[in-house]
Length: 91
Image (tube, rainbow, N blue to C red; front, side, top):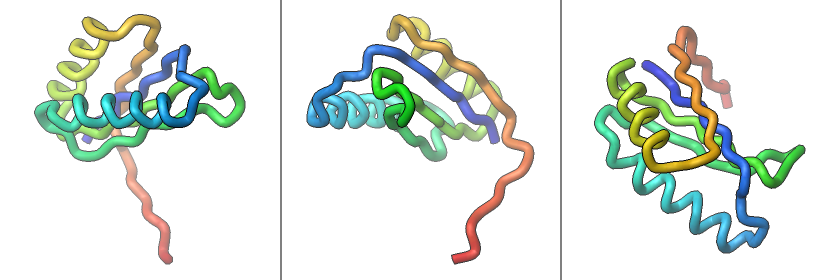
C-alpha cells in the first residue's frame, strides 16, 4: 500500500468552514481509484496548515491522486510514501 501525504496553508479559521473544506476534500478523494482510507486535519502547532494522509492500494493510484490534486489545488506540498510496516493498538 501507498500513502499520499499532503500539507497546505490557508486553512479556514472558522470551525464550520474548516469542517466543510475537510468534508469536500474527503468526498473528492474517496472517489479516487484505489482509495483505501484517509484523514484530514489542522496542524496543532500551526492552525493555518492542513494535513492529509491518504492510503491507496498501488503506487500508480497514489501517483494519479497526486497528479489530480496538483492540477486542481494551489499551494500544496505532496509526498508519496510506501507503507512498509503497519501497526495497530491492542485495545
